[in-house]
Image (cartoon, rainbow, N blue to C red; front, side):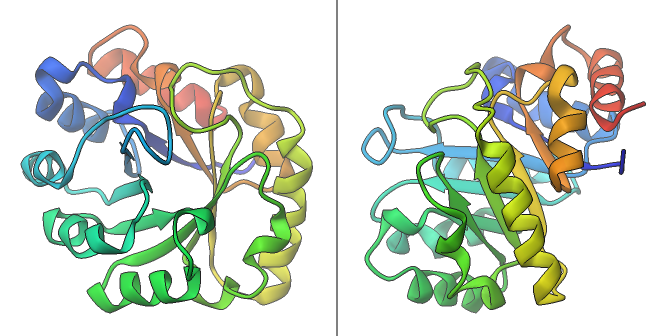
Length: 220
């Protein structure tokens, strides 16, 4: 099993001490901080905005992997970049012009990602793969943490792995939704290079627990 990047989702962290939680996952060995931004419109939940990202940015030096589950998305790209986002990932369905949206992300200096919902086919990235630094496979329907992994997404991960390899580009293939120790090996074997995990990382509370959980997800 290749060792995947681990991007803990702060959606599962203790929001009463979010800065400390972000610092703890970096100290525990996380590779990125995954920030789930939901607007109660594109997805049925409401989370955080640029002000929270900006407040958290000083608490970790690892990249902020910001997943925008919002529509419209274009008006908020610069605000999240200014707040400290290193990678900005958007959904093709969240606006009429995904190519233009990715151009806007690139123009800020951030890396650009596209997220595919369970019902969004792998072929969606074909016209935009040359612009992507990250492809995020949603293995649950976005909106809430703690859902079960949708096994049919393994075939999509395999298809995307082939597309990325054929392109010759260094694109992160990230998977988010129901990721845990029991299925991490299958997900990575299918071709994922990064795993987003919420409860699977933050279970137990505290840096020592987080370090053990991260190591387990990596296959250690």
